[in-house]
Length: 238
Length: 238
Image (cartoon, each protein chain N blue to C red):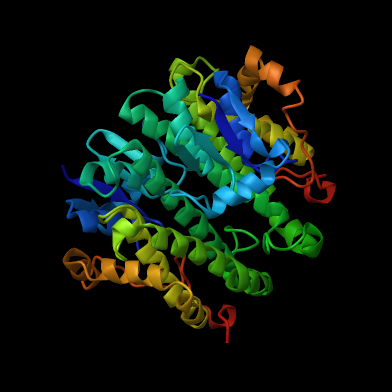
């Protein structure tokens, strides 16, 4: 089955968490909006059908049309061995993925604290204020949590967050580390010192042959200032 | 099996979405932090065990300890018939629940746009600014989406969001409507006119005998200005 991924063209955004899982699984997929007429097709699917999405990304998998990033990863995890098979293991992996989602919302809202309907340029003072608490409190709290989880997962041998195998949690955490390094290089340099196990999971993902091939391909859209992870030097620590 | 629900005492918060599902199912549970020593027990569980949560709520179900509101509801939906049994139906209900979660984050952040580590009193001008876009754009967008979904679900006969039966999506949407009425009574009066089907689903939940009994009981904590839905008149429309 060839999946169809629907997400805004030109940014990694939330779609990237799905792309990374598809790439890690070696799944066959098409990134629809990067083809001619793709965005019109996406907008149409958001307004019709039995299971329309509130927003991209969503994934067409045969007859299924699945929305919400973590929900798509729940589905792909089962289909491609990117999550444990037991009920307890699946729920735990999904719980961690939802915690990544929460972190991603906060990362995005640093540059958009007043509202997603406004430009960053319209909320720079508020963003600067929000960035302070984000760097001092939220980044250490989230990374500290994932560090504890990685430490407790002995089966992962320093490479995996859940059990002994690669999961969608690993690929999403990889993306969060990459994104934070891009957006807040100074703050992240300091934060990583206290989260060596999170960095090790990131490195293990980056070293996978499929990931290496993907990251060097044109399928990997570069970070930019339209996505979730934006590098605005004035928001980073000194 | 008697469930143990862990959530901050004194507020409905995210825990309420779990409580409503438990009550709708007639499930046996204890609200741990409302008992003596409960909060200490909760804090301990967040720092130990194989599946610690980043934050409450979490649910102890036999040997399982499940965190993240939508993940708990995914589990309870399967156990108590509060979600369809087919894969497509389960994923769809979960997708809608995750969209409710996204809406709840935005509702919370209206009074905390700069950061959760600060008091509302420290971010009142920013909150006022955020409330404008929230009322004018986000509330109509989210309610409009749920209205379309309710309309498309013919099997629900105007009572249910997913299929022909009560689901965790109905109970969560009930809570969102209740909360928005409390927090933004003026804005909500206008918004409801364009979302009659959402209101009908709310009313159908409110009329369930188990829900009526719960809402009139002391188990239902009143809305207040420490939770997600806060009534600050200066943030409402005139």
